[in-house]
Image (cartoon, rainbow, N blue to C red; front, side, top):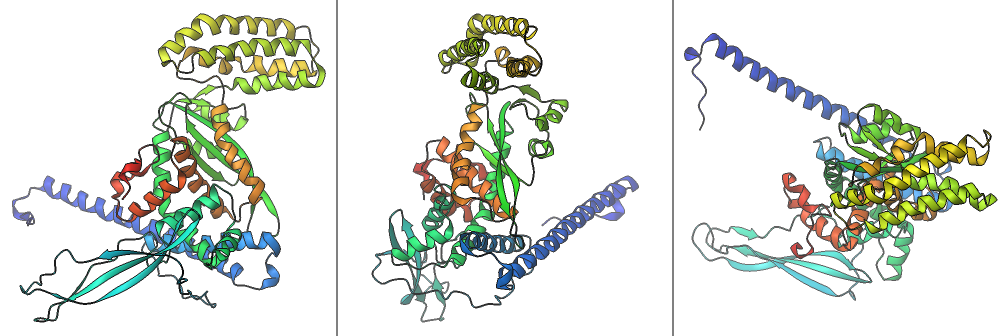
Length: 511
């Protein structure tokens, strides 16, 4: 045991150093307490507002499918906030003020899978051999795509007749303590909602047809808690992306409906991914209330590298802070393509042919190492790009301002340095299509769920979809990935969280 220093033997400098160290620890603890108190007050206010909406007058709520979608989001938000309060050491959740769905007995016709848990040793501390006096059975509902089953966790009770000591193996740690769902069922609910875009009220109907009635409010609670528990993985995935020298970024609008309002407003989902030629295959979605470039700067933080993006003005401040702009040739080509489609412009046609030649060279170099790709571009692509720039400059002087061809030429000429930056670095892609491909699942989902039920629901969707899409990019089945992660997460060390990221996850390591 470490003994306290003898103050009589310490000189004045050592005493001052010790006092400064102690003051620093006290100040750090005070800051931590202040942060937790502030965050707890904020969450307590937020959950009170949501409860007033969820359990308030029905006249103030929406009806129809919109109402169902919003209620799901609010229920999930309440469960998520309660979990965050528990994590912060805040007050326990308030008792439910309305009748909660009563947990029904699991249908007897479902197949039972018995999982036995026995103590590691049945020898009592007093030296006697314990006798098995009974068992305790806990049933959890499991789901393998297409089939419900019940896991029976049988924990034998062992007692010592000599000293009457009772021993029983503990239940394995779960993502949701005392919940009925296994990690397999939770993974299925998340994949169905965020990959297959099935709202919870539709899932409720599907499960009822399968003989198991799970209330939407229960499904929503599962989604809310899982969103909180999975957030550390998304944070670690963001850090992994920001360790790469090249990053793609793009954004797409989504509609958001807030509790207490019957109108939607436009929010945005941003997508960030490593460069198309980087080894790391991942994407992180970031839900924000608007499209301001400040959101991109907040996400990127201190990162400084090559940013592949379109010409949206919100990114300009990023370049002033030291990031390098890499333009998107696909956007430049699109201007000429639209012009050619509408007017059969010969100038647009010639521009398309030259840009097409640049893309043909990229196809040749797709599988090459960056140095070899760079040499190929120097030999073949650079002369074509130089000739194209001279040709565009010559024709721009001949066409009147304000015409469609003038606007198409101006778009490329004003951004030529960014559009051709890829010629100087074999790690850079010619366009931003890589990240646009990662936004397509969002566009598909938008057609199904129409809007996000709340700001918190939007952030939760972004987090879970980040893990699902990243798993797909690495060739994993999202269901198998999430099932394993949710199984291991409760006991997995925080300092090894990166082992559970999609690009590090190994299917053979499944428990």
